[in-house]
Length: 293
Image 1 (cartoon, rainbow, N blue to C red):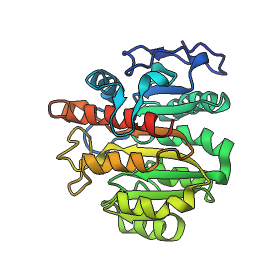
Image 2 (image 1 turned 90 degrees about the vertical axis):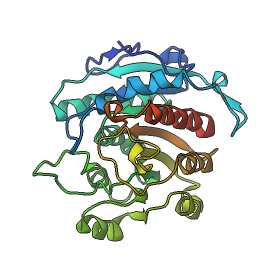
Image 3 (image 1 turned 45 degrees about the horizontal axis):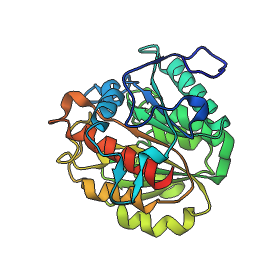
Image 4 (image 1 turned 90 degrees about the horizontal axis):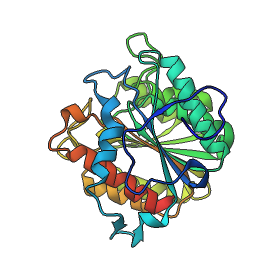
């Protein structure tokens, strides 16, 4: 149970702690939450096992980042464990996710959410948009547009998540990076309403850094933005993606920016090879913590 008062009863399962994330909630500046939701994936399921796999993989890492000359021991990090969700109930699950995110935001802590499928981002961002409004910039790293209005007549899907986020507040800046898959209508929608960059991540991110320098920034990072050669453990792999080195460079570019929250989603351990996707995800989380949290 989370050791702070919340409106609705919220439970967590302890599936281990991310590397050095042993502080209590009250004393932490950074809070990790596992969100093992896996209901609307459109190809291969298994992302509910992502958070625990990322935590386990983190113990293969050093606490020191040679890229940044910074150490995790210098950060006050709490890992609440995996949020207990009512399996199959999308709307109630999203409400619980929103409630946890709202508490973290209200308490002025930096949240890192480990998915789980990408739809969790909708529940999380409802709280961030409520607080930061159009001062928020959302950086979306993904192979897929995720801008459909519905997917097989279902409005709540990992294929609709960024469209649902946009509907919360069309004035919020949304930037998509690494996109290489989607329906024609999604690209047409993005051309009118968001900022989409195809195939690449590092150079387009450099080009928008001046635009977002004064914004509060939320990052939603789908592991399938990487080429399956580097991250095979995901439910919707899409060839033609970025390298692990490019992903790390993108995180490091945001060093010292005002990032107030992040999720890393769509790690699916059943399809991983030798755990390389989970260890990459854990390293990205470590570098994110040390870069901008």
